[in-house]
Amino acid sequence: MTTNQMNSKTRVLNALNGLPVDRPPACNPTNVASVELMDLVDSHFPEAHRNPELNAKLAATGYTELGFDSIAPYFSIIQESSAIGCEMQWEQKDNWPTVRMTKPIWKSSSDVSIPEDFLTHKDTRAIIDSIKLLKQEFGDEVAIVGKTMGPWTLAYHVFGVEPFLLGTVDDPAEIMKSLRKLMEFTILFGEAQIEAGADVLTVPDHATGDLVSGEYYRRFLLEIHQELEEILPVPLILHICGNTVDRMPYIAQTGMAAFHFDSKNDPQEAMEAVDGGIKLVGNINNPTTLYSRGPAEVRKEVYKALDAGVQLIAPECAIPLKTKLENLLEIPIAIEDWSAERNN
Image (cartoon, rainbow, N blue to C red):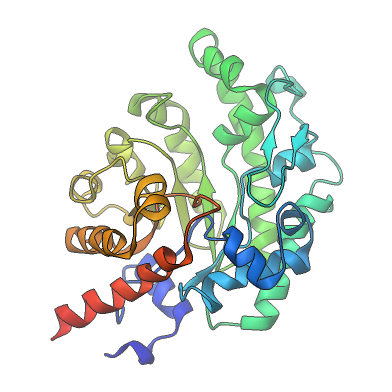
């Protein structure tokens, strides 16, 4: 089978479903939009987060300019939180928007409620409408990857990181109530993106190794993630930053299609930790390799991940916005070369 026998969408979906592929996909579950790409298509942050036409134009460059097998129009992690009512800092084209978590909007599970305009709010609507535009333009040519925040991530935004994490110790039953209620946002936004045309959903849920243990993941999130997999009818890619090898055996039990993992985890060790229970996506280093080094170093990391058996290749997380295009372009080129070498 040669590379021109399989289009990008088929390649990504086959890889996620454990079916044969002509080569491993370059699949972006988070963001590969950069300042250079913003300038190239005249679509800049913060407007590209909030305007569906600008959003779609910038998102498409991951496929049309970089040669990735996917398009991911949700660049950040804050669209739902804005629609919920969190105070936002939108920043400019060279910086990420953030939630001002020093001013939490809720204190307990009893405060959690879904605003009537949650799916019609400008910042959720921008992603839904962008997906529709991308689907109209590209059809079934390329995989469109939506994104819906998991309840743990949403909890950081609406309760504040410190109060939420303290609650996991002081009142775990109350925290579980909050996570269950917040899960409804994950489902609603995910379903809306699927209806708009998303082929895959990334679910970022930042129970990172820097903040909580693998046992916390099992206690608070494993069952919720299993339920999300049952409810949302497309392949799901779970994303958690940091060193996560200690929770990968649990993540492999979620039933999700893949886990998008950080460069803090060795690819071979990660493959052994999931033991075939879930596909892996990743894990090219952002701050050092993609941002600071050159194509040769990028190629070395791509080969290392592929040699370990990682099924889909991507940056470890949303890229630094001033990442050089030559480094991003090297990812699909290196995959092609690795595949050609193995097939000869």
